Length: 341
Image 1 (cartoon, rainbow, N blue to C red):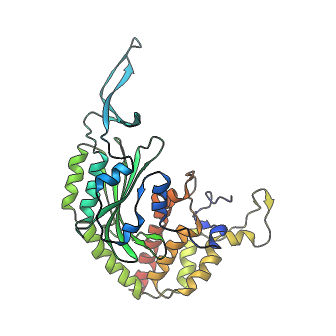
Image 2 (image 1 turned 45 degrees about the horizontal axis):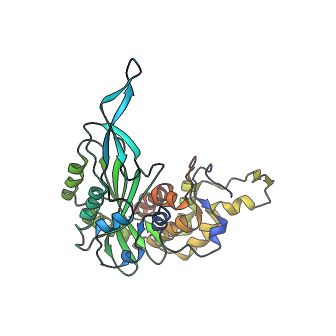
Image 3 (image 1 turned 120 degrees about the vertical axis):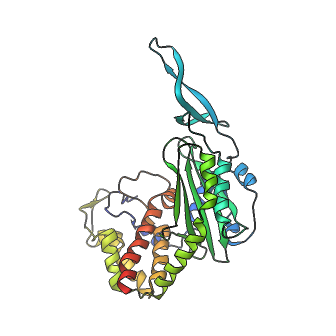
């Protein structure tokens, strides 16, 4: 397979994908399914509620983290307890997820999912957990999907990425799912995300999120931004400028997969000509952004420089795909919308 992981902008055109219909459903939910988690795609577009306990149990995540002592050799080589540190262990598999200080109080998966539902319910009381899974080398990472509000073809989601341990953070993101295109839209507005650092009492930190109206603020900000984008003309000039800033100019390669490149072949793998043709059909910035998100999810080779992640849906849902969509959003707001103001 041709890999564009070393390309400056990443996300070059995947010719095999561009010539066929997209795979069904959101990459995020496909990823959860592959990880043997629970994904309830039909509930994204309804107001039906779920029992978080049942979803977590189905995903194998309804367990309490065990805390165990860490043994280190003393001066005589005899094992003894390390002062000030504890190991966090997944009890059903007996795998060590991380080592933390004794002052750290872990929040179980139930607390993380509960916090996400709490944030989503600030908008609609029918908010529900509709996806959950664990992944990573020792299943130490988790992802939760909560539906905040839904219609027949759109859903507002709160996503949570979590890793147990004394570093990093629990990240809460607000995003929008498009049912028709099977893609995730990621408007980069000020209240699109909030982080809870992995320090201190995590249960208390998560509980304090009830005082942060993340989702209502996101809706107010994003609706205003979407309206401005809908009213802003999109032209081929914008397409060319966006491609140049995000992907650079096509660079002919001497060799592809051990063989000489035929005239024009390297150009076909750069998104320039493909996007120039595709975006000709759109006359406003909002529709152009939606289509660019579709391109990232369904027609691109989703990698960044040095990205060795094997699962494409994971790259789309939890890393490079998300970041590129946010870069596209910021470029449109900072360049197209600002110039048209």
